[in-house]
Amino acid sequence: MPEEIKNLGEEYQRLSMAGFDAATRSFGEMNRGLQALAAEMTDCSKRTFEDVFHAWEQFLGARSIGQLIEIQSEYARKAYDTYTSEMSKLAEIYVATVRNASKPIEQATSRKAV
Image (cartoon, rainbow, N blue to C red):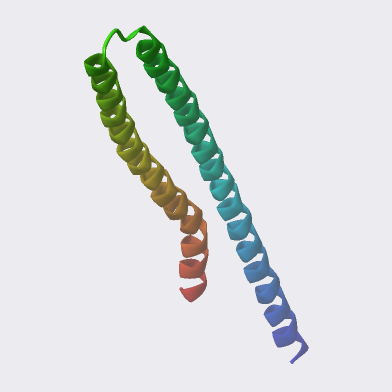
């Protein structure tokens, strides 16, 4: 009986360590994903600021109402395209982050079930 209790304790300790290691790897993957998201959002903000500044320069140099409307229309089209592209990139990063962060947990639970 004492040997069975010892074995049970060792098995519990092994499974606990495996779970802790999986959680640590999962948090590491989540951290990398959040850093990638932050970097992408920073880059997008910089590009957006540059686009606004460029449009403003063009706006100030316009010679007619027609040019103003053309500049505004071009800026609006570009802003929309940039927005949709950026949302697609961010969604891909989110999905990859969740997928990568869940792998260590999936691997740990599949080993426990075996």
